[in-house]
Every structure is written in structure tokens, then in C-alpha cells.
Image 1 (cartoon, rainbow, N blue to C red):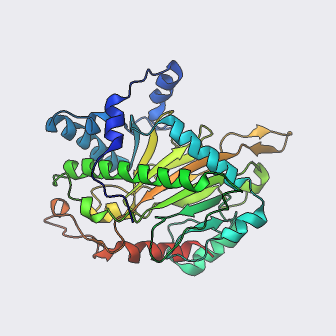
Image 2: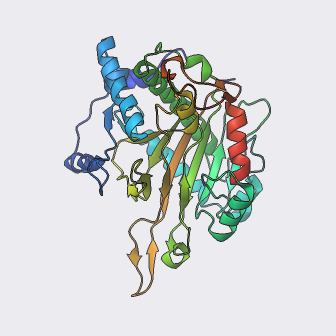
Length: 368
């Protein structure tokens, strides 16, 4: 059964934690503006001002910053979020250990069922896209599958669907490390959703009872080093343009880069520079539906970062790692327009839908 969310160790950590900011990090943070268009800015949010706030007014200021970021761009950088860097790096190490396993071992843990959404996904099996047409997606997958592999993990205590864990001897402490991190990410999700509730003029705990079942998905991602000629085919990328399905995505990424975000007004994809010590957080489709599109679920993709030259005509892209924690409402939660987001003129933009109904439908179309 899940741990009941009664206290916030992240809040305690934020209040106790002090750190100096090295010069390279300060310089990198100046790049929070996406390179090609200075008007398209992913805001950098100091989350300790919310989780460690001593007044409701201070909480509300940070909540408004977060909500405005999701209104304008759909993405924010979350700084001072309370998850120690050592914890994150340990998860990255365990993830790397898993992907180093032989293919025949990983394939025994293969993803099989969109309702379960658990297990190993080999390179080329997934093709993320905004299309909802099964035939079109199949053609895209055959022509230009996503060049990545992943491991999908859900709540481990689920009564119906079980995670596919490697043997302890193959990747020591993998299961315990991942499960602990899953819980940590859930707790951060609850805090960020409380900030969003305040920023949308709702009771701070409005979402608590609608996200407490931990119906989330953690995705460990490995983008292998690849020769650039394999990424030159039309439509090919490391991960195609898509929006995410749930409420929020917490993205932990290395320094390699490659994430691009679509400018909501020009349609151009522009790079989002990794900022040390931060988590990239974006709003998903269900949060956009819940808020009647007050909050933006923005298209994004992963492309090849700058290449390492092998010859005059060929290069190689470096390997990349990331960890995406896809935060979802409870499976049976009804996603309908929030009372504070109802437009008196236009009314509701979307019919009500349950979390499971929406996510399973998207997953069925995404995988072969």
C-alpha cells in the first residue's frame, strides 16, 4: 500500500539545506531564456519560497510565478526543489547499470500492456506523436521510430499490474533505489500541485484527494550514442514531438542537452538549455483539460545534441540519459473543468474524461 502523505520531508530538507551557487551555474541560469527568441522564457522558480514559506502571501507569490509559467510557456525550471543532487545522481547510476545489461536480459522484462504501462521498451518500439490515428502512427513508427530505449515503472503495490524488475544480482539495489525515488517524486508532485491550486484560486489542498493513489509512471531513458546518418532520415529524432499525458512531468536530465520546446505562437522548436541543480517541469494534457487550457500543455521533442566529428562527412552524437516522472491524477479521477477556470462566454472546452480512459487510449496508439 502507498505511504500516506502526512508530512513533507522535502520541506524539511529545503528549510535545512544551504548551498552556494558556483559561477558556472549562475552563468548557465542566465540561459533560461530559450536561445533563438528572448521573448520566449522558461521561468526559473525558487521553490523553497513556497515549500519553506512563513506566510501565505509568500506562498501565493511563488504559486503565481508557477502558474504564469504554465500559462505562458507550459514549462518551468524548478530550483531548490529539495531533492538532494546525490540522490538524483545515484538514480542515474542505477539507470545506467540497467541499460548496460545484455539485450536478451532486458527483453525478458518487455513492456506488454498499455493498462499496465510497465517494463522495458527496446529501441524503435515507441513512436511518440500527437496523432491519434493508429494507421498514421504505425507508418511513422516504421519510417522513423524514436531512437531511445526506456524502462517504465509504476506504483509497486498495485493490486493488478506488477513492475518488471531485473534480478537483484544483475543490478544490485536497483529496485530499492527506484522505489524510494518514486515516492520522493510523488511528494514533490503533491507540493507543486498545491502551488498550482493556490495560483488558480482554489483551496491549497484541492488536488490532494485526486492524486493520492500514486497512479504515476517513472520512465528511465537511455539515448545511445549514434552516428548522425541514422538521424538524418525524414522525421527521425531521438523522441518525436509530443505533449505529455498527465498533470505534470518532472524531468531530470544530464548536461548533454537535446530537449526542444515549441514556441506556442511561432510553432518553431527551440532548445531548452539544461540548468544544473534544477528540474524541468511541464504541464501535461490532463492538467490543460482540467484548467480549460488556462495552463498550457506544450509540444516538445528530443533531438541530437551537437555532434562529435568522425570524418568530413560523418559524426556521432553523444549518449544521453534522463529520468521522466509522469505525474497523473488517480486512475478513476474525473477530469472536468475546474470551477475557477470556467469561461462564462466559451464554457467548457472538453468533455469530462477519467485519467485511465485518457492515458490508456494514448498509450495504445503509441506502441506497437
